[in-house]
Length: 123
Image (cartoon, rainbow, N blue to C red):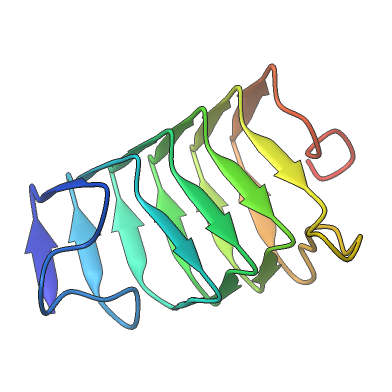
């Protein structure tokens, strides 16, 4: 399903999930989720103050996406693509069992970060 210009605050809307959708020009504000499987594409979206715990981002694509003040705890980003993305004051931290975020097979193209923790050695 393609979702254009959606405005999601605190949660995804009814009938909307993270699996195999295309989100274009969407805003996600203070959305939190735990143990979700994310396989969607995100184009020119914004994530602000969002948080994921044990999120499995598999083959997800992020193009022109801005992340601001987001927290990723123990998340896995397997074979994801990040193109021209910006990360501002985001934390990629371990989960409560000490497992950190992983980026196996992910690729980064023309991305920028500032004031982030946990991305120092990634790109």
